[in-house]
Image (cartoon, rainbow, N blue to C red; front, top):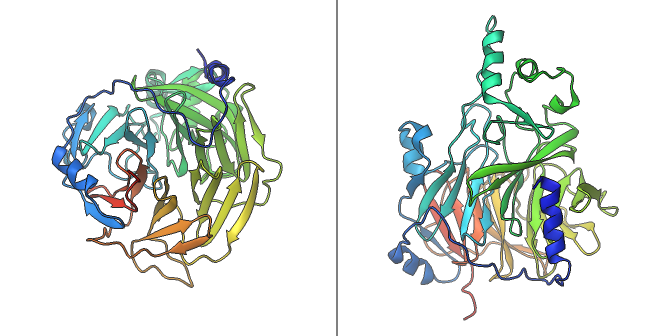
Length: 420
């Protein structure tokens, strides 16, 4: 089943289901690798009072680790936070959060990890493929031979033989999880070609070096590719090509109550799954710029975007942006923060280290945004607070905490205890 066919399959299944404000209950599934829960840690999290931080013990690592060749940092810490990769995505049927993304020179990998808070464990689901080498003068034929072995052209996209992006770059905020198809979504603005010798790649695959398929290497306007990963099968799956983009630092969300993919890159789009087309929202021309972070409230059917000190709101019913705050008391921006929506507290949670000319950074801090009141607050959390700068995070609805991961440390924040 190809990418569009599988999308259409979801549409057919859900055609007779009325779309509610809250997504339907997730059917149970066997999750592998099976991990034993840390009962003592879960008890501490369960007992965590409102508005309180908790630092977790050191994490454990399992899974496909042979490719690391004994690297002590990864074996001790898990994936480590990659540059401009500040978002983790919640997989409800697995009750774990997925993470991936590459850097320019550090972490140039297509590996995929997931974090199980209950076991305080990182599992590597997909060990990285070999990284494309830098072509040295006089070694062009050697480079061509490398790409012949490590790259394939399939269904209009270039991937590794195992189906992964060849050399991915940052996720920015273009990272989501499709809870209906149970696939991780990574919208890669470089098509997996960052740092790739495209002349040697073209020769290896029999392509014209000027083929449009190889274009838009940089972060400017053009085409991006949407890569998908199946955590249950531990496989990179289909690739959706011809995704419009205005710039690299964009935002992607999956809206479970609407069963659709939402995409912000210059314009705002939604994916018409039946046609495989990106539909530009007609009333969304005036919206956030690049570099921001978004989170979705399914009850109000609105997304909040924090872009520097500007706070924006996108109403899905009207498909329209509004500027809620021009100069907010605080805000977020990739790579200085992470942002999520707490469904129990009904508040947006921001962990930020953002600095600005008129508001220099006072260090890492936590802020809450109330959509109904259009108000940012400093909750002055209890307990020792993290001081990590470069982080990735998500909201864990199963344990009702925001999780903030900073390579060497992991913290959870309880905003409000859920109603019994």
